[in-house]
Image 1: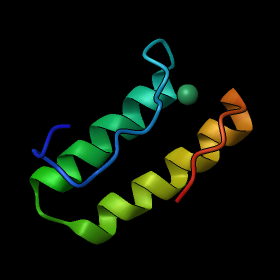
Image 2: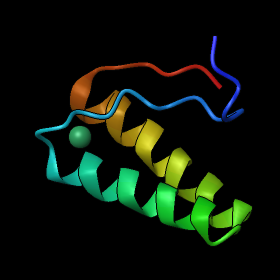
Image 3: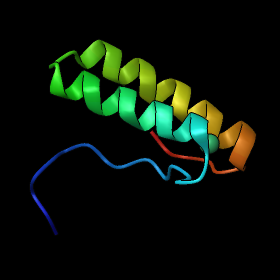
Length: 59
Ligand SMILES: [Zn+2]
């Protein structure tokens, strides 16, 4: 169990350009300490993961 973050990594597909973009955006928002933007990216990413990759992510 690691304690470095409270944020669960979403199951991004490494080979998917959109996943890469969402992951980068989420990480940048976190780095910029912009939680609302981070949440926006995660909402979009979860929708993308469900619709495109068929992966349902809780939360
Ligand atoms: Zn993707």
